[in-house]
Image (tube, rainbow, N blue to C red):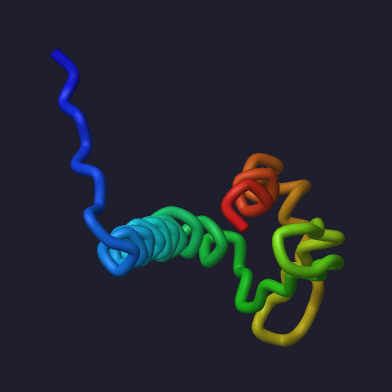
Length: 92
């Protein structure tokens, strides 16, 4: 038997439920960044990540993701961990 979700009784209740869902997604993303991506980036010597984005609102795309070490030198992360760049694009 499938459990049915309760339908919000008011607009305020609906908005509150939407906000809770957004907060949960944001927390899941934060956790994934902290627990998965940061250790991988640190192991490659990455100190800074820059993302170039074009567009606005819900429309747009990532143009590039650049990685630098603590001295500002570019790091070719894709050459060392090709999946990491794809994973970051999917997350962002």
